[in-house]
Length: 376
Image 1 (cartoon, rainbow, N blue to C red):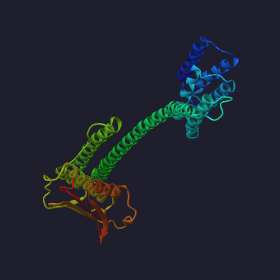
Image 2: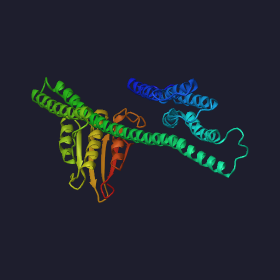
Image 3: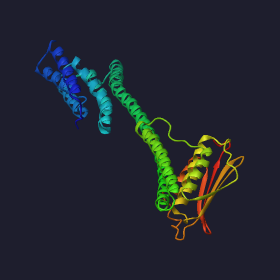
Protein backbone atom coordinates (compact mmCIF):
# COMPACT_ATOMS: atom_id res chain seq x y z
CA UNK A 1 0.00 0.00 0.00
CA UNK A 2 2.91 2.31 0.75
CA UNK A 3 5.65 2.94 -1.77
CA UNK A 4 9.29 3.23 -0.79
CA UNK A 5 10.47 6.82 -1.20
CA UNK A 6 13.75 8.45 -0.43
CA UNK A 7 14.04 10.87 2.48
CA UNK A 8 14.41 13.74 0.02
CA UNK A 9 11.18 12.80 -1.77
CA UNK A 10 9.28 12.57 1.50
CA UNK A 11 10.60 15.94 2.63
CA UNK A 12 9.63 17.52 -0.70
CA UNK A 13 6.10 16.07 -0.67
CA UNK A 14 5.39 16.96 2.95
CA UNK A 15 6.98 20.37 2.62
CA UNK A 16 4.99 21.19 -0.52
CA UNK A 17 1.72 20.11 1.15
CA UNK A 18 2.54 22.14 4.27
CA UNK A 19 3.34 25.19 2.15
CA UNK A 20 0.03 24.90 0.27
CA UNK A 21 -1.80 24.50 3.60
CA UNK A 22 -0.11 27.60 5.04
CA UNK A 23 -0.95 29.66 1.95
CA UNK A 24 -4.60 28.57 2.09
CA UNK A 25 -4.90 29.44 5.78
CA UNK A 26 -3.75 32.97 5.03
CA UNK A 27 -7.04 33.30 3.14
CA UNK A 28 -10.52 33.41 4.58
CA UNK A 29 -11.81 30.20 6.16
CA UNK A 30 -15.61 30.30 6.23
CA UNK A 31 -16.25 27.67 8.92
CA UNK A 32 -14.64 24.70 10.71
CA UNK A 33 -15.92 22.34 8.02
CA UNK A 34 -13.96 24.25 5.38
CA UNK A 35 -10.85 24.09 7.59
CA UNK A 36 -11.27 20.33 7.81
CA UNK A 37 -11.64 20.06 4.02
CA UNK A 38 -8.48 22.12 3.49
CA UNK A 39 -6.54 19.91 5.91
CA UNK A 40 -7.81 16.75 4.21
CA UNK A 41 -6.82 18.05 0.77
CA UNK A 42 -3.35 18.94 2.07
CA UNK A 43 -3.03 15.46 3.59
CA UNK A 44 -4.01 13.87 0.26
CA UNK A 45 -1.38 16.05 -1.42
CA UNK A 46 1.29 14.86 1.02
CA UNK A 47 0.33 11.18 0.54
CA UNK A 48 -0.02 11.25 -3.24
CA UNK A 49 3.31 9.49 -4.01
CA UNK A 50 3.89 7.40 -0.91
CA UNK A 51 0.37 5.90 -1.09
CA UNK A 52 -1.75 6.84 -4.13
CA UNK A 53 -4.64 4.65 -2.93
CA UNK A 54 -4.77 6.33 0.50
CA UNK A 55 -4.43 9.77 -1.07
CA UNK A 56 -7.36 9.00 -3.38
CA UNK A 57 -9.50 7.90 -0.42
CA UNK A 58 -8.61 10.99 1.63
CA UNK A 59 -9.43 13.26 -1.32
CA UNK A 60 -12.85 11.59 -1.68
CA UNK A 61 -13.55 12.05 2.05
CA UNK A 62 -12.69 15.73 1.77
CA UNK A 63 -14.86 16.18 -1.34
CA UNK A 64 -17.85 14.41 0.25
CA UNK A 65 -17.51 16.51 3.42
CA UNK A 66 -17.37 19.63 1.30
CA UNK A 67 -20.57 18.73 -0.57
CA UNK A 68 -22.39 17.68 2.60
CA UNK A 69 -21.57 21.06 4.12
CA UNK A 70 -22.88 22.75 1.00
CA UNK A 71 -19.65 24.64 0.34
CA UNK A 72 -18.58 26.04 -3.02
CA UNK A 73 -15.45 24.82 -4.87
CA UNK A 74 -12.26 25.89 -3.15
CA UNK A 75 -8.65 26.43 -4.20
CA UNK A 76 -7.67 23.43 -2.08
CA UNK A 77 -9.62 21.22 -4.50
CA UNK A 78 -6.68 21.54 -6.93
CA UNK A 79 -5.03 18.81 -4.85
CA UNK A 80 -7.49 16.39 -6.48
CA UNK A 81 -5.73 16.89 -9.84
CA UNK A 82 -2.36 15.95 -8.33
CA UNK A 83 -3.91 12.88 -6.67
CA UNK A 84 -5.44 11.70 -9.96
CA UNK A 85 -2.10 12.18 -11.71
CA UNK A 86 -0.20 10.10 -9.14
CA UNK A 87 -2.88 7.38 -9.09
CA UNK A 88 -2.10 6.75 -12.78
CA UNK A 89 1.65 7.40 -12.52
CA UNK A 90 2.54 5.47 -9.35
CA UNK A 91 -0.53 3.39 -8.44
CA UNK A 92 -1.00 -0.31 -8.92
CA UNK A 93 -3.25 -1.59 -11.68
CA UNK A 94 -6.32 -1.51 -9.42
CA UNK A 95 -5.53 1.95 -8.07
CA UNK A 96 -4.93 3.20 -11.59
CA UNK A 97 -8.39 2.13 -12.75
CA UNK A 98 -9.92 3.44 -9.53
CA UNK A 99 -8.36 6.79 -10.37
CA UNK A 100 -9.96 6.74 -13.82
CA UNK A 101 -13.32 5.79 -12.30
CA UNK A 102 -12.91 8.59 -9.76
CA UNK A 103 -12.32 11.10 -12.55
CA UNK A 104 -15.53 10.07 -14.31
CA UNK A 105 -17.60 9.76 -11.15
CA UNK A 106 -16.17 12.98 -9.75
CA UNK A 107 -17.15 14.87 -12.91
CA UNK A 108 -20.69 13.49 -12.67
CA UNK A 109 -21.03 14.24 -8.94
CA UNK A 110 -19.62 17.76 -9.40
CA UNK A 111 -22.08 18.41 -12.22
CA UNK A 112 -25.08 17.28 -10.16
CA UNK A 113 -23.84 19.23 -7.14
CA UNK A 114 -23.22 22.48 -9.03
CA UNK A 115 -26.30 22.48 -11.27
CA UNK A 116 -28.99 21.19 -8.91
CA UNK A 117 -30.62 22.74 -5.89
CA UNK A 118 -33.83 22.57 -3.85
CA UNK A 119 -37.00 23.67 -5.60
CA UNK A 120 -35.51 23.69 -9.12
CA UNK A 121 -37.74 20.87 -10.39
CA UNK A 122 -37.08 19.56 -13.87
CA UNK A 123 -34.18 21.39 -15.51
CA UNK A 124 -35.01 23.71 -18.34
CA UNK A 125 -32.87 23.93 -21.48
CA UNK A 126 -30.51 26.50 -19.99
CA UNK A 127 -29.88 24.42 -16.88
CA UNK A 128 -29.43 21.32 -19.03
CA UNK A 129 -26.87 23.10 -21.24
CA UNK A 130 -25.04 24.31 -18.16
CA UNK A 131 -24.99 20.77 -16.76
CA UNK A 132 -23.59 19.38 -20.00
CA UNK A 133 -20.88 22.05 -20.17
CA UNK A 134 -20.03 21.55 -16.49
CA UNK A 135 -19.73 17.78 -16.94
CA UNK A 136 -17.60 18.11 -20.06
CA UNK A 137 -15.30 20.64 -18.44
CA UNK A 138 -14.98 18.67 -15.20
CA UNK A 139 -14.36 15.40 -17.05
CA UNK A 140 -11.77 17.09 -19.28
CA UNK A 141 -9.83 18.59 -16.36
CA UNK A 142 -9.97 15.50 -14.15
CA UNK A 143 -9.42 13.08 -17.03
CA UNK A 144 -6.52 15.11 -18.38
CA UNK A 145 -4.70 14.87 -15.03
CA UNK A 146 -5.17 11.09 -14.94
CA UNK A 147 -4.18 10.72 -18.62
CA UNK A 148 -1.04 12.78 -18.11
CA UNK A 149 0.02 10.45 -15.30
CA UNK A 150 -0.61 7.41 -17.51
CA UNK A 151 1.42 8.92 -20.37
CA UNK A 152 4.37 9.61 -18.07
CA UNK A 153 4.12 6.04 -16.74
CA UNK A 154 4.14 4.64 -20.29
CA UNK A 155 7.09 6.84 -21.25
CA UNK A 156 9.13 5.77 -18.22
CA UNK A 157 8.23 2.11 -18.77
CA UNK A 158 9.42 2.38 -22.37
CA UNK A 159 12.72 3.92 -21.28
CA UNK A 160 13.25 1.23 -18.62
CA UNK A 161 12.41 -1.48 -21.14
CA UNK A 162 14.94 -0.14 -23.65
CA UNK A 163 17.53 0.12 -20.90
CA UNK A 164 16.88 -3.47 -19.82
CA UNK A 165 17.12 -4.70 -23.42
CA UNK A 166 20.38 -2.84 -23.84
CA UNK A 167 21.74 -4.35 -20.63
CA UNK A 168 20.62 -7.82 -21.74
CA UNK A 169 22.30 -7.37 -25.13
CA UNK A 170 25.50 -6.20 -23.46
CA UNK A 171 25.38 -9.21 -21.14
CA UNK A 172 24.99 -11.54 -24.14
CA UNK A 173 27.91 -9.89 -25.92
CA UNK A 174 30.07 -10.15 -22.80
CA UNK A 175 29.12 -13.81 -22.35
CA UNK A 176 29.94 -14.59 -25.98
CA UNK A 177 33.30 -12.88 -25.62
CA UNK A 178 34.04 -14.79 -22.43
CA UNK A 179 33.14 -18.06 -24.15
CA UNK A 180 35.47 -17.20 -27.03
CA UNK A 181 38.27 -16.44 -24.58
CA UNK A 182 37.55 -19.70 -22.74
CA UNK A 183 37.83 -21.65 -26.01
CA UNK A 184 41.12 -19.94 -26.84
CA UNK A 185 42.37 -20.60 -23.32
CA UNK A 186 41.49 -24.28 -23.62
CA UNK A 187 43.22 -24.57 -26.99
CA UNK A 188 46.38 -22.80 -25.83
CA UNK A 189 46.71 -24.52 -22.46
CA UNK A 190 45.73 -28.02 -23.60
CA UNK A 191 48.10 -27.97 -26.56
CA UNK A 192 51.00 -26.47 -24.64
CA UNK A 193 50.67 -28.81 -21.68
CA UNK A 194 50.46 -31.83 -23.98
CA UNK A 195 53.71 -30.77 -25.68
CA UNK A 196 55.42 -30.04 -22.35
CA UNK A 197 54.39 -33.42 -20.89
CA UNK A 198 55.60 -35.31 -23.96
CA UNK A 199 58.90 -33.43 -24.03
CA UNK A 200 59.41 -33.87 -20.27
CA UNK A 201 58.88 -37.63 -20.53
CA UNK A 202 61.33 -37.78 -23.44
CA UNK A 203 63.92 -35.71 -21.58
CA UNK A 204 63.56 -37.91 -18.47
CA UNK A 205 64.25 -41.09 -20.45
CA UNK A 206 67.01 -39.57 -22.59
CA UNK A 207 68.88 -37.80 -19.80
CA UNK A 208 70.84 -40.90 -18.87
CA UNK A 209 71.76 -42.06 -22.36
CA UNK A 210 71.70 -38.98 -24.63
CA UNK A 211 72.10 -35.64 -22.79
CA UNK A 212 71.93 -33.71 -26.08
CA UNK A 213 68.41 -34.97 -26.76
CA UNK A 214 67.43 -34.09 -23.21
CA UNK A 215 68.80 -30.58 -23.69
CA UNK A 216 66.77 -30.16 -26.90
CA UNK A 217 63.65 -31.39 -25.14
CA UNK A 218 64.17 -28.94 -22.28
CA UNK A 219 64.65 -26.12 -24.77
CA UNK A 220 61.39 -27.07 -26.47
CA UNK A 221 59.65 -27.13 -23.09
CA UNK A 222 60.95 -23.66 -22.26
CA UNK A 223 59.90 -22.26 -25.64
CA UNK A 224 56.45 -23.83 -25.52
CA UNK A 225 55.83 -22.72 -21.94
CA UNK A 226 57.00 -19.18 -22.71
CA UNK A 227 54.70 -18.93 -25.74
CA UNK A 228 51.77 -20.37 -23.78
CA UNK A 229 52.39 -17.94 -20.93
CA UNK A 230 52.34 -15.02 -23.34
CA UNK A 231 49.07 -16.21 -24.90
CA UNK A 232 47.47 -16.80 -21.50
CA UNK A 233 48.50 -13.36 -20.29
CA UNK A 234 46.98 -11.82 -23.40
CA UNK A 235 43.73 -13.74 -22.92
CA UNK A 236 43.55 -12.83 -19.23
CA UNK A 237 44.13 -9.19 -20.11
CA UNK A 238 41.12 -9.36 -22.43
CA UNK A 239 39.06 -10.99 -19.70
CA UNK A 240 40.04 -8.31 -17.20
CA UNK A 241 39.82 -5.24 -19.39
CA UNK A 242 37.44 -6.45 -22.14
CA UNK A 243 39.61 -4.90 -24.80
CA UNK A 244 42.57 -5.67 -27.02
CA UNK A 245 43.20 -8.53 -29.39
CA UNK A 246 44.14 -11.98 -28.22
CA UNK A 247 46.45 -14.41 -29.98
CA UNK A 248 45.14 -14.84 -33.52
CA UNK A 249 47.30 -17.36 -35.37
CA UNK A 250 46.79 -18.04 -39.07
CA UNK A 251 47.31 -21.11 -41.23
CA UNK A 252 50.81 -19.87 -41.94
CA UNK A 253 51.58 -20.90 -38.35
CA UNK A 254 50.60 -24.52 -39.03
CA UNK A 255 54.14 -25.35 -40.08
CA UNK A 256 55.51 -24.29 -36.69
CA UNK A 257 52.70 -26.19 -34.96
CA UNK A 258 53.50 -29.38 -36.86
CA UNK A 259 57.22 -29.07 -36.11
CA UNK A 260 56.45 -28.58 -32.43
CA UNK A 261 54.35 -31.73 -32.32
CA UNK A 262 56.93 -33.70 -34.26
CA UNK A 263 59.52 -32.67 -31.69
CA UNK A 264 57.13 -33.97 -29.00
CA UNK A 265 57.06 -37.44 -30.52
CA UNK A 266 54.04 -37.31 -32.83
CA UNK A 267 54.82 -38.20 -36.42
CA UNK A 268 52.80 -35.82 -38.58
CA UNK A 269 52.58 -36.09 -42.36
CA UNK A 270 51.35 -33.01 -44.22
CA UNK A 271 49.60 -33.92 -47.44
CA UNK A 272 50.21 -31.23 -50.06
CA UNK A 273 51.07 -27.56 -49.62
CA UNK A 274 49.16 -25.33 -47.23
CA UNK A 275 48.16 -22.29 -49.27
CA UNK A 276 45.90 -20.11 -47.15
CA UNK A 277 46.50 -16.67 -48.58
CA UNK A 278 43.00 -16.52 -50.07
CA UNK A 279 41.18 -17.28 -46.81
CA UNK A 280 39.78 -14.56 -44.52
CA UNK A 281 41.46 -14.18 -41.13
CA UNK A 282 38.43 -15.53 -39.23
CA UNK A 283 38.39 -18.74 -41.28
CA UNK A 284 42.15 -19.16 -40.90
CA UNK A 285 41.87 -18.81 -37.12
CA UNK A 286 39.06 -21.40 -36.97
CA UNK A 287 40.99 -23.90 -39.11
CA UNK A 288 44.20 -23.37 -37.14
CA UNK A 289 42.47 -23.93 -33.79
CA UNK A 290 40.74 -27.05 -35.08
CA UNK A 291 44.04 -28.42 -36.38
CA UNK A 292 45.75 -27.56 -33.10
CA UNK A 293 43.10 -29.32 -31.02
CA UNK A 294 42.93 -32.39 -33.28
CA UNK A 295 46.71 -32.87 -33.37
CA UNK A 296 46.96 -32.28 -29.61
CA UNK A 297 44.29 -34.96 -29.06
CA UNK A 298 46.28 -37.28 -31.34
CA UNK A 299 49.36 -36.72 -29.20
CA UNK A 300 47.50 -37.24 -25.93
CA UNK A 301 45.05 -40.00 -26.81
CA UNK A 302 46.47 -41.65 -29.94
CA UNK A 303 48.56 -44.78 -30.08
CA UNK A 304 52.12 -44.20 -28.80
CA UNK A 305 54.45 -44.10 -31.78
CA UNK A 306 51.48 -43.69 -34.12
CA UNK A 307 51.17 -41.34 -37.03
CA UNK A 308 48.90 -38.45 -37.94
CA UNK A 309 48.13 -36.96 -41.32
CA UNK A 310 47.01 -33.44 -42.09
CA UNK A 311 45.58 -32.22 -45.37
CA UNK A 312 43.99 -28.90 -46.34
CA UNK A 313 42.03 -28.52 -49.55
CA UNK A 314 41.04 -24.93 -50.35
CA UNK A 315 38.35 -24.83 -53.00
CA UNK A 316 36.33 -22.03 -54.54
CA UNK A 317 33.51 -22.34 -51.99
CA UNK A 318 35.00 -24.06 -48.96
CA UNK A 319 38.18 -25.15 -47.25
CA UNK A 320 38.29 -28.76 -46.04
CA UNK A 321 40.69 -29.70 -43.28
CA UNK A 322 41.21 -33.41 -42.59
CA UNK A 323 43.29 -34.80 -39.73
CA UNK A 324 43.58 -38.52 -39.09
CA UNK A 325 45.59 -40.35 -36.44
CA UNK A 326 46.04 -43.94 -35.32
CA UNK A 327 43.68 -44.95 -32.54
CA UNK A 328 45.03 -46.16 -29.23
CA UNK A 329 44.70 -49.84 -28.35
CA UNK A 330 41.90 -49.00 -25.90
CA UNK A 331 40.36 -45.84 -27.32
CA UNK A 332 37.83 -43.74 -25.46
CA UNK A 333 34.27 -44.31 -26.75
CA UNK A 334 33.52 -41.84 -29.53
CA UNK A 335 30.10 -41.05 -28.06
CA UNK A 336 31.77 -39.56 -24.96
CA UNK A 337 32.92 -36.39 -26.64
CA UNK A 338 35.06 -34.21 -24.43
CA UNK A 339 35.54 -30.48 -24.42
CA UNK A 340 37.99 -30.72 -27.31
CA UNK A 341 35.55 -32.16 -29.86
CA UNK A 342 32.78 -29.89 -28.57
CA UNK A 343 35.05 -26.86 -28.93
CA UNK A 344 36.12 -27.83 -32.45
CA UNK A 345 32.50 -28.33 -33.48
CA UNK A 346 31.50 -24.98 -32.05
CA UNK A 347 34.37 -23.22 -33.82
CA UNK A 348 33.33 -24.75 -37.12
CA UNK A 349 29.69 -23.74 -36.58
CA UNK A 350 30.63 -20.18 -35.63
CA UNK A 351 32.62 -19.95 -38.88
CA UNK A 352 29.54 -21.09 -40.81
CA UNK A 353 30.81 -24.62 -41.44
CA UNK A 354 30.56 -28.13 -40.03
CA UNK A 355 32.79 -30.72 -38.38
CA UNK A 356 32.73 -34.48 -38.03
CA UNK A 357 34.89 -36.54 -35.70
CA UNK A 358 34.52 -40.30 -36.09
CA UNK A 359 36.50 -43.51 -35.84
CA UNK A 360 37.18 -45.12 -39.23
CA UNK A 361 38.84 -48.51 -38.87
CA UNK A 362 41.95 -48.11 -36.75
CA UNK A 363 42.03 -44.33 -37.28
CA UNK A 364 40.26 -41.36 -35.77
CA UNK A 365 39.35 -38.80 -38.45
CA UNK A 366 38.43 -35.16 -37.92
CA UNK A 367 37.03 -33.36 -40.95
CA UNK A 368 36.17 -29.66 -40.88
CA UNK A 369 34.52 -27.86 -43.77
CA UNK A 370 34.56 -24.06 -43.59
CA UNK A 371 32.88 -21.95 -46.32
CA UNK A 372 35.15 -19.23 -47.71
CA UNK A 373 33.01 -17.61 -50.41
CA UNK A 374 30.57 -14.71 -50.36
CA UNK A 375 28.64 -16.31 -47.43
CA UNK A 376 30.74 -14.17 -45.04
